[in-house]
Length: 97
Image (cartoon, rainbow, N blue to C red):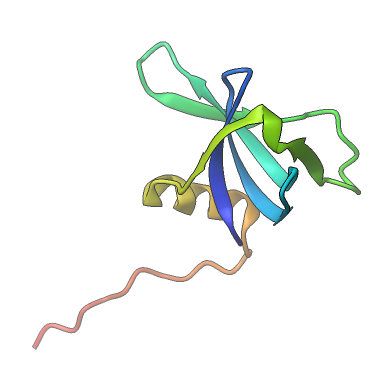
């Protein structure tokens, strides 16, 4: 799963899985918009909430994207918990001798 943060020309920061990309557009799915909170942190809300969930891909023109970057590892982990595999791996335990 190739998940990135995209800054859109509207100012929105969107976290989404990149399905495919070419010279003119990027196809995304499972988008979350980053929402600032009153406490100074951030939250997340679904992006494009009224789309057909049977066809979740959204094609965005590269003309509307300012940048695409990798996610912080803690945000990547949260995203994977929401949209990734339902298989949860336990934390590694160390054997003390």
